[in-house]
Length: 344
Image 1: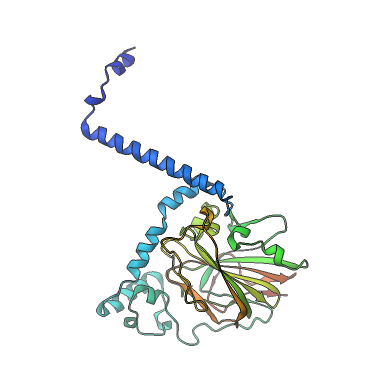
Image 2: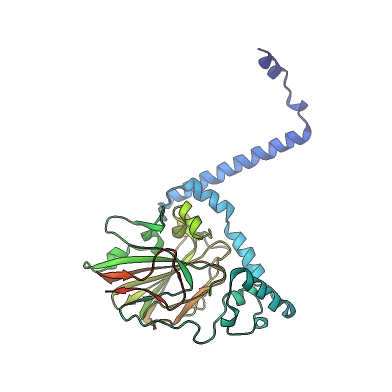
């Protein structure tokens, strides 16, 4: 009864002004957040949930925490010209922190005008010898193997890492099972590039590239511990997919962007621009940018393909005859040119 009487005597005007202002601000933020999340879920439903997002609520908050604009700011900062007097010290500090082998770098440290130039550095000749694997694949990047697996006939979802999944059809923009031969198998491998790794991509085999696709998307972290906790990260992140044919059939090499890593470049297409301001994410209704190579782009095993400006992930999805055997397991560290697996 006393509580009820005290409520009746309550006057909003008696509340301290600063507390009232804080209440107004918090209410406005809560209402705005609720509205934005509702619109995000509505947008996904209207466009047909192209990325097969399983947890829209979680994905909304990941977008809030790791927005694309943040990656643009980081990209702009790392593209700023570094004074010559500071270059060796700055790059050496980064190399010490992340274990970069400076003796492999082709040019002197003070020859890199920006941090991005150093990050996407070239190596001296012979630093990455290419293994001879006539019926198999070599690693296209310096990396840690996150997961390997096989795509089954009855499931669109495959593992990012053990414990979380994404839709392979949404990831590639088509169903690879529809393009594969009936008597063949489809395999995939996810390769994570840490900040200290060499960040250029090379061809994993002799391949003819016939098509490239750019998927505008999010820029969420792709570290293994993050992929393990959240589904659909690879299917919503910005990425560039190259599709072609190798000796056993379909081959897809996909470069996936990550937090602070919106810049992906290709040696075979210098016009490619990623993480552009006005682009709309594909899973929110944006279009996939396709580019055809009518005559095909011939790549030998180990040929340069492109790279990242900052760390990220590469995914291979490929067709092979039955009996393909992996030479690696999740957790293994690899360098460009080391064997991934081969047909027995």
